[in-house]
Image (tube, rainbow, N blue to C red):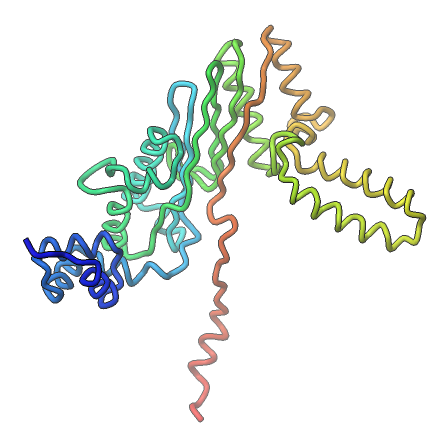
Length: 310
């Protein structure tokens, strides 16, 4: 067997753009022959995938998987929404969600775990799909949540297929209450989360940096009023309370009954079923959130082609 050195792997990567593990595998398969390794990568469709890897993938699907007192979410991206309707892509996302449930939502472990079907890892499975479907794809993130006693309710918005959609939410409720009633309660809270997009479950869990930034903004705005410092301070505190009411789940007005907060709704539901219910946390994924999408002006692009060359 040829000695596959780091320098040889780098040479093949520079030549083809393939990933490190793919390059090494190709060299092993071809006894260190660079040209043969390049052909091997091409035959496997890996070069095609590598060439697409720098293209923005901001569409795709959120996949949900549920277990005993636990659930997981994954976001798998594609370049277009068209691919999200592809049965092969949907099957892959559903399988990856199940892997995430087993790996407790650790995205690195999920990416390198055995593929739910076929040979290789989850990442290698996605690369094969890239070659087959013709678009860049990536496993962007994964998360899981569990409770010792109670339920982890799920909700999928803009459903594409069972357990797949554009928004996925998990809500963990710790309780000894009836599981069917807890699941119904959790689903309602999850629907609220999908709609109102809270930043944290409780005030204590809100990122201090986010609060401080909001405080600075509100202080600057209030200071422009020209009022005394003590009045400005009270104005800022009032606006921070309002910020909590808008950003913290248990402080938000419940969308199905705006007269009560989500926290009060959960508390009342627990009393009605005769068992205390504790919100242990939530996770919300929305396809493409935070990804900068390229916006093409098609009319301008066409016009540019019609201009005479200077």
